[in-house]
Every structure is written in C-alpha cells, then in structure tokens.
View (cartoon, rainbow, N blue to C red):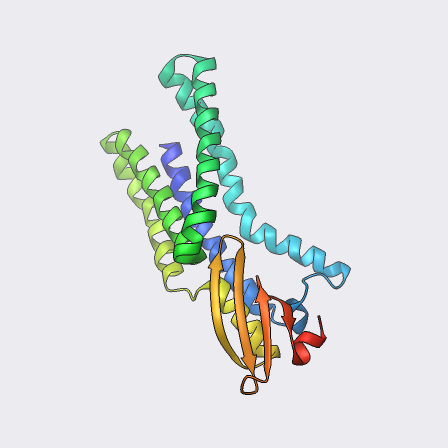
Amino acid sequence: ESLAKAQALVSALALAGLVVYWAVGRTTVEVKYLYTQLTQASDLLAMFGWAVLIILPVTFVMGFFFPVAVAAGVRLSGRVGGGVGSLYAANTLGAIAGALVVGFIMIPVIGTKISFIFVSILTALTGAMLAWMGGEETKRRFGAWMALPVAASLAAFFLPDPVFSIIQARIMRNQPGDIQFHAEDKAGAVTVCSAEGGRIQFLCINGFVVSGNGPAGRLM
C-alpha cells in the first residue's frame, strides 16, 4: 500500500513540477533570458531556487520509494541478497530504458508536455496495479490517492505547451515578430523567428538566440 501511494504522489508532484516550470518561465521574460540565464551572482541563486521548487518535492518522495520497495521485495522473496540484487538490476535497467525512450523517441514525436503527462499517468497506473495486488481494502483506500494524479493530469493537459509558450513569451516581449518554425528533438528545441516583414531573422536553440541579424544578432 505504501508503494502504491508513493507512486500516486510521485505522479502528482511530477505534474505539479511541470506547472511550476511553466509559471517560472512565464515570469522570466527579460531580454537576458534570450542569451543567458547567468548575468550576475543572484541569477545562480534564483536558478537553484527554481530547481528546488520544480524537482525537490518529487525526488524527495522518490527517495522513499526504493527502500520501501527493497523491504517488500525481501519479504516476498525471503532472500536478502537475491531480493535486493534483483530490484537494483530492475531499477537500473528501467532508468536506462526510460531515459532512452523518452529522450530519443517520445519527446521528438509527441513533445515534452505530452511525454510528461504520459509518463506520469503510467506511474499512477503502476501504483493502481500495486494497490490492486494488495486486496480489496487497499484498493478502497487507494481511491482517494488516485484522485491526485488524475486532477494533476487534467490541469497539465489544459496547460499551454511549457517549452513553446516560454520561448514565445520571451521572443514576443523583446523582439516582436512571427515564429516561423518550432520543433522539439532529442538534441533540443529549435525555433526560427522573423520580424519586420522578414527583414530580421534569428535562430533559437533551447530558447537562446544563437544566430541572426538585427538587434537579436548584434546582442549575441
């Protein structure tokens, strides 16, 4: 039951982190963010604070998951060495496979937002499966916990695409024009923009201007 609840909470917190990421990005639209996030010492502290808000809650809960899973695995197998070894192997292989599938397949095909929602829902369903294995009483108690990732998934689904909307807000604030092309790939997000009827053009990689003419290019 503890494992099932942890999975549901991880799913909800991961999606909440996506919302926080979008909210932080929408408030950091000064021109410097088109070129670098680090222009003074306080920027480093700000980045650390944002990372804490976005990542710490979900990783804190994930830190509890593995020790609980190890204890459950040892109880089921009756062997300490074999139970712990199998869990470590499965955890390592799962982490490698997940990173490869999400980074090289899912994000290029369906984007960061939908990939995030899909993985979070899959995590919550894993928790539901664990609750189902725990019997009727566990399933009844888990129902309320399942509401957390369901609500978070709905909120994230109606959220504007975080990567695109943050890049768009920064560009429109500082170099109003048209975004001609935007795509996410395994290597990053590529955005091509034009302004003043096409006289000014510039290229952004992961939201940072790397090439262009006009004011955008001169500030590089």
